[in-house]
Image (cartoon, rainbow, N blue to C red; front, side):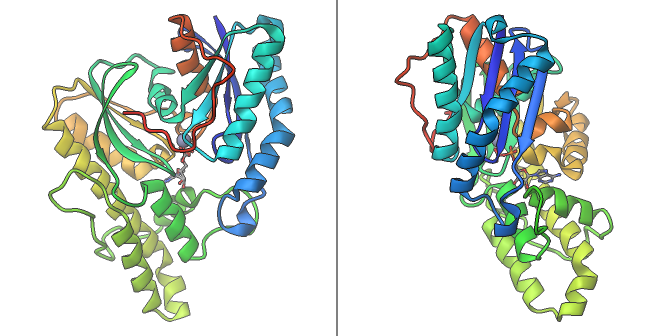
Amino acid sequence: MLVLGIETSCDETAAAVVDESYTVHSNIIFSQQDHARYGGVVPELASRAHVRTLVPVIRQALEAAGIDFAGVDGLAATRGPGLVGSLIVGLSMAKGLALARNKPLVGVHHLEGHIFSNFIERQVEMPFLTLLVSGGHTELILVRELGSYQLLSRTRDDAAGEAFDKVAKLLDLLPGEGVVMGGRIIAELAERGDPKAIDFPRGLVGEIDFSFSGLKTSVLNYVRGLELRERKRQLPDIAASFQEAVVDALVDKTVMALGQTDIKAICLAGGVAANQRLRHKLRAEVERRDLPFYCPSLALCTDNAVMIGAVGAFYLNRGVRDGFDLDAVPRLSLC
Ligand code: KG4
Ligand code: ZN
């Protein structure tokens, strides 16, 4: 079964062809460039860009998979959570194609997509724990089997990726043009800095929930106390120390959750899973406890349509179908 996955929940316009064994036949991602000059994703611009680029992106995905639309057995599109205008573009496209060619359709939860991103390259022992860290979410989810999710912990305020993005903005690190990815910019700068230079707070000590807003304020207060030249000089140390505080908090809560469950493996997922320091420190802690640790290759951490196609293939293969009344849901919890 070949499934065309469509992902338009934020500022990536993506389409991919995946089959029921999660083999990737194509993977096309167009990252929108229009938002950088505004310092963050502008919802109205994002939906307009999806309208402009989704058809060519789908065409490329079919071409790269070596099929035409007749070769597609089903459609899967992200239905939420995300920016409502952006979600509607992808979902309407999927509905239109399904209606015109009489193909089955299924709506996909974006976070379930991130969980599935670990299944593209391997099998994972069950039950497993996923640390899902993205621009909108920071959660520890216990997965007993695919399709059955239990929330163990979440952020009480900012998501980890959101903290990276906000700190990149307050440090004036965002480029005037290009893709807005504060986390990537901070991670690059941090390579030249000392992670122990500044002792930023690690969130809610002794609790399993995450909190990053205090850390963000602490960075703000720190840089406010510096003259411009000194601030510039310290930037790599500030980036490295901030990143270390985020990573330590993420690792600490995940280790807490390990003690509470009978899990057989740990997975990392979401855009922040691309962070090398997090991958390295979490792997060390997990493997010290003799558990397997998995994280997707970098291209599958940030938003993509392969993960959406994989979830679609999973459900379509089990006979799940959505009707044409399927709606976009901007706030949608997984469990
Ligand atoms: O999963 P994703 O592509 O979109 C959402 O579903 O939110 O995640 C995007 C987030 C952004 O906040 C971005 O700054 C962060 O992932 N990110 C990183 C890195 N690469 C992307 N954060 C830390 N280190 C990175 N290398
Ligand atoms: Zn995402």
